[in-house]
Amino acid sequence: MVEAYPFGAADSIDPHPRYAALRQQSGLGLIKTRWGGTAWLATRYHDVKLVLGDPRFSRELAAGRDEVARPRPSIDSPDQIISMDPPNHTRLRRLVAKAFTAHRVEQLRPRVTEMVDDLIDRMDVPSRTADLATALAWPLPMMVISEMLGVPDADRDNFRRWTELVLALGGEVTLEEMIEARERLNAYLAELIAQRRVNPTADLLSDLVAARDEGDRLSEEELIRLGVTLLIAGHETTANQIGNFVFVLLDNDRAGWRQLAADPTSVPEAVEELLRYVPMAASADFARVAREDVEVGGQLVRAGEAVLVQVHAANRDSAVFHQPDDLDLTRAHNPHIAFGFGVHYCLGVSLARLELRIVLSALLERFPDLRLGVPAEEVPWRTDRLVRGVRALPVAW
Image (cartoon, rainbow, N blue to C red):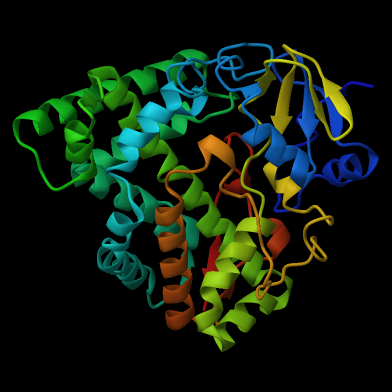
C-alpha cells in the first residue's frame, strides 16, 4: 500500500508513531510525496546511513524533480551545494571548508558568549517571564551567522524575513513570494561580495572571496549561492533547536532541567542526546535517486526510483540505541546522525554545537529554576516550515 506522506503535522516534539511501525515492519516504506510522486522512505538507522553515504544514490538526479523533490528553485535546485554530487560538491565543499574550520568557530566562543549574556540580560526583566523563542532562540543564531558573514546589524531583520519566506512550506506563502525572497537574498549577497572584493574584512565572506585551491576559486554565482545557503543553514536549524531543547528539558516536571542544573558540566553530553532525541525536520525532504539497482534493508530499489530518509526516525532505532525513546542525558554510546552522514554531513556542525552548549550553560547558570510559563500542551508549534520548532516558548523563573 502506498501511504500519503507526511503522516501528520509536526505540531509537537514527538515523532509520528508511523515511523516506529515502519522500522518494525520493513526497512523501507512506499509513500506518496506531497508533490504527487512515489518514493521509498528509509527509517532504520543503517538503511538511512546507506542511502546518505552510498554514491549509488544521487542528490543531483532528485533535485528539481517535482514529483519527489520540493518544486521550488529557491532551495532544491541542482546548482545548490546541498543538491550536488561529487565531484562538483567535493570541489565547492573543499573551498568552503578552508574558511569554515573548527578552529575558526572555536575563536568565536567569547563573542557568542557575549551575545548570549546580552540577550539574557535583556530577557531578565522584573516580571520574571519571557518568550524564550523571541528573546533568545531566534535572534542569537541570526546574530552569529550575520556577524560571521559580515552582515550589518541594520540589515538582519530583512535577512530574517527573506529566510522565513524561502523556507515556507506553502500555506499563506506563494511560490512567487518564495522565489522573490531568494532573489532578494541573492542580490544583497552579490552587493556584499562586490564590497569584499574591493575592501576585504575579517569575516567569512571575505575568506570565501579569497578561497583558492591549486588555482581554483569560487565563481561569482557560487559565492552568492554559498553565502545564502550558509546564512539559512547557519541560523534556522539552531534557532529552532534552542527552543525545542529547552521545551524538552522543562517538560515532564522539569526533570531534565533539574538534572542539568545539578551537574552543568554534563551539558556537552546532554546536547548530543538532545540532538538525537529531538526531531528537527518537519518531514523527510531532499530525496536521493538510485543510479542503479540497490538493495536497502531487504528491499530492492530500482534505478531511477527515489528514496527519502527520515533521520530522526533512524535516531530512535533500538538496533543501535538502548531504550531509544527515553531521554538519557548521560548516554555514553550515542552515534546519532542528527547532522547527517556522508558527503553532505553538516558543514556547520561545530558552530551549532558551540551555540547550543553556550546557550544551555548560560540559561542554567542564570535561571536554575526556569519553568514553562504555560502548560506544555499550550505551547504553540510552527507547522508551516521545513524545520520543526515552537512558535513561542513562554517561560518563567
